[in-house]
Image (cartoon, rainbow, N blue to C red):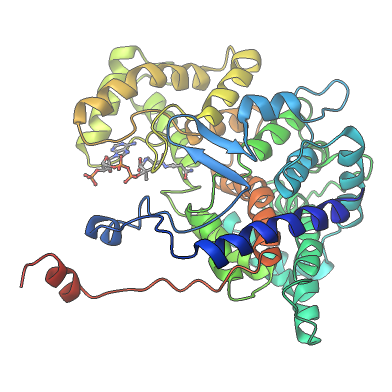
Length: 435
Ligand code: AMX
């Protein structure tokens, strides 16, 4: 059964479940909302649906019900690879099923046909100032390709129909997913490698071809696969996923939606944190320990100084998680195998011992444990991707796997345009009994 046929079958079943919930149980209460949630970024309010992933505060992310160790173990791998095919993760997120090797190959072939980057995107990127942030180039490249949207074409032709709208959305999702690694590598080679581009190799899988286009030898293909799989999704309330869902709820296509999401991912409290971690560690090594691995006492002092200056410890804490991020642990395992002698990894490991007790002692940090960003930058640096600014682009390529799967399902289930209600401070004071 092809991916599209499989999805059609799953969508039909899921529509029945959603329709029943709406028709018979629409008035069932899901949550109550407090003033601190309304003022405090809607934290924790249960107000969205997604079956692509679920973030348990204690256990971390589950992709379609599977934990990270399960995903890394169960998804098909190519002979000799340490990490599964990225295409397999995309298939899992789209359909909810662990693909067979054949399913993966079919999807990989589909993506290969779609990966050419339009020439006008390259021209546009080259016309932009070279000191433009790579996330700006990435978001601009995505929105520039909006003219390719099959959903927009379908809508403009007057074909919009709630039953079929997911089909052109799937086409767009496959097109964009195929092009994002090419776009990312193009930006990298243009900006940091003096316009020396390496063409895509049609024989390689998504992770392998990304490493090829970046110009980085093995095991960077496995690093790319791991990075994209781990960053694929983190349920739907985070800034990038929510932004894409919100924009798409206006029936904007995936190009508009995903480029908007990238604006959110570029923020320091979201995707930018992975570059902050590395910057912070290198500043410590340069200024405090003469370029060497610091002692535990030097490290503690640096952590305390950072906090005293009013800054957060990058890579630690999370809005939802309350334990060490399993994405941190998966990357740590890889680093323990491949980066044993890397001095920055030595500091990352020491921070894992030093930071949590200090953050806990502050009494206000809800999660003193490391998140994904505490570990990912050091691995990129080790393999020669030393341009911090680029790390969020890598995050953006990976995050598309989950966000695009969600957008297909948003259209399939006919989710409504988002329109939460805002209130005034006067109203809050009145409800609080202040007046
Ligand atoms: N260092 C110092 N203080 C921290 C902290 C950290 N790593 N994490 C949280 N705190 C502080 C908050 O600043 C807040 O202080 P305040 O009351 O004085 O403003 C207090 O602890 C309570 O915050 P919280 O409820 O525990 O966290 P949050 O949900 O408000 O914020 C996050 C979550 C991630 C923004 C925050 O932990 C943080 O800034 N961490 C560092 C940046 C980072 O690693 N971001 C990456 C997140 C993952 C991702 O999206 N890629």
